[in-house]
Image (cartoon, rainbow, N blue to C red; front, side, top):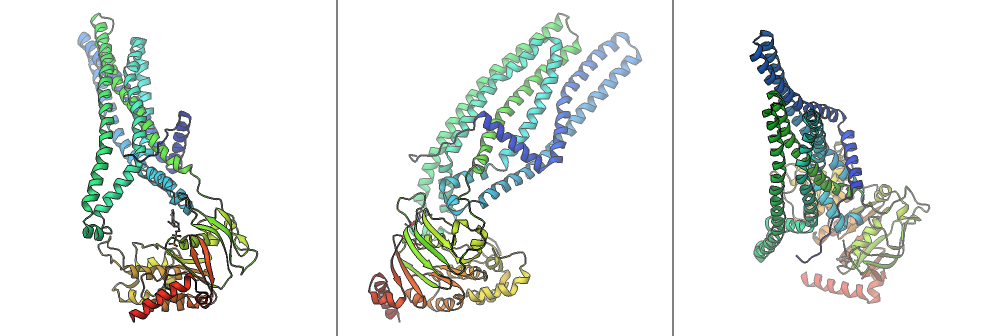
Amino acid sequence: MTEPVTQADAPGLREAVRQAGALIALVWRTAPALSCAIAAATVLLALAPALAAYLAKLIVDGVLAALETGTPEDRRQVMIWVAAEAGVLGGMLALRRMLAFLKRVLHAELGQAVSRVIFDKTLSMDLCTIEDATVQEKIILARKHAAARPFALISRLFDTAQFTITIATFSAVLWSFHPLAVFVIVIGGLPLFIGELRFSSEAFRFYTAQTAEMRRRTYLEGLMTSDGAATERLHARSGDAVLNRYRALFQSMFGADRRLQGRRAWAGVALIAASSLIFVLGKGWVVWETVLGAITLGQMIMYAALLKQGQNTMTSLLATASGGYEDLLYASNLFTLLALPEGVRRGALEAGPKPGDGYRLSAVRFSYPSTQRPAIDGLNLHIPAGQRLGVVGANGSGKTTLIKLLTGLYLPDEGEITLDGAPIADWAPEALFARTAALFQPFGRYNLTAGENIAIGSDLESRDTQEDALWAAAEAGLAAQMIREWPDGMDTRLSRQFLDGRELSGGQWQRLALSRALMRTQADTLILDEPTSALDPEAEAELLQTAARPDRTTILVSHRLSNLRAADRIIVLERGRIIEAGSHGELVAEGGVYAAMFDTQGAFYRDEN
Ligand code: ADP
């Protein structure tokens, strides 16, 4: 792979602590009662092992005393300790089960909460931001780790607290044997900790840097499996070529991954051996002291158990802490996304100072972030309210970009666009978008019912009261007859992705999209970007008659110039500039680019008939 990949930076310690704090706050806001229950169970579970070890000591020493004295009280006392130990061990089992259940609930709730945070962010991004490939990459990373990593981190925080309390109680007891015994536990776990920490950040950098490759892999997988790509795939037999690319990509990704995992495994073996050796030495020391008669048999069993369990707990603690660090690194993708700017700040205007002035573009220039040449290059245009404007131009001349600028989805880099006398950026986005009804290219194809396809974005909730509006829009968008013919009418589920779904042709989808645009009857500007690309000429003529209401501004992008005859004004775009403007008659008389295009199309239709 020679393509450069983005190198994600691991957050520094201070930033990591801040992010962990933010996640804890999110958990607390999401599920306060659940968090308290988990915390309480964690503390109880943390204290139990030391208590159990102490009861085991009491039992052994009690048995020895009972054997020596033979009194019924001593025998009864031992049985009480046995019952108490059984109670503690049974309680621990029950608590562990309960804790696992509570954590599962928290997992689901936190996953949902984090997803909401992500959706809130992506829904507030403007079009330019969300179309940016690096932003998309960050969204993918955040979503990929959204449910699992933040929860894993929180779960590990609880585990860390539990293990720390357990080790503290173990240390307190071991201290009475010898302070150095505490040292044995701590030192024994250290090598593992340092090793894991090193590999955690290496793995994070490695996998994050592979995001671009992963995206490409998913894309190639889609090419080989999706139905949408099947027609060309089968016809051109391109499957093998795609498969070869997929194989090469997989091998380069997998090879590097395997090397990393291999090194991690070998380092793990060496470090575990080192820490185990330290604990074996500690245990030998305890047994030796017993043989010397310095401590009782009960104490030996207790200290040995504490050393053994201390070893396990310390290993768990360090594995948890370093795993938590890894989780934090992945969860930091969420914060990277949240820190992104959402786009240019918009104003709050609901109306302009000059109603009826319409759209004015002066010296507007706009470039896509990834490109050198401006898509719109110094454009001047006035579209007064009520005008019917036709937009013509070759592919790539800037028609769609102009529409996105007019609707306010993009803001110009230079120059100004005003609506009713106020700059577009000063408008409240909702008020601005409510002014236009638009059919974009490409338009949406929702895997919902036919009715929902038309109503989405207007007001899905009050669907019943909208039945008339729905049919009126379907009528205007030339979809009504087709929907009437379906057995379930407006309730027909669309797209083959559902078993009971119906797949539509391009032209049928376009009729639904048109109806959806025409559902916005309050909008005073109708913008249609190639509304008829998949419609036959008769349908097209019918549509334009009904859609273009006299009280509305209509902006029509079309390749079929015969449609534009009725337009008040037509502009011809080339490389983001207006090269000709005027009425149909004027442009034909002018004998320029438009006239030549019209001539060619006229000849085509004449020949056809
Ligand atoms: P038209 O609608 O006339 O076919 P567009 O407005 O879609 O033209 O495109 C104008 C120019 O901007 C073209 O050169 C096209 O390659 C480029 N362009 C369009 N969309 C994007 C995008 N999302 N990112 C980068 N360049 C784009």
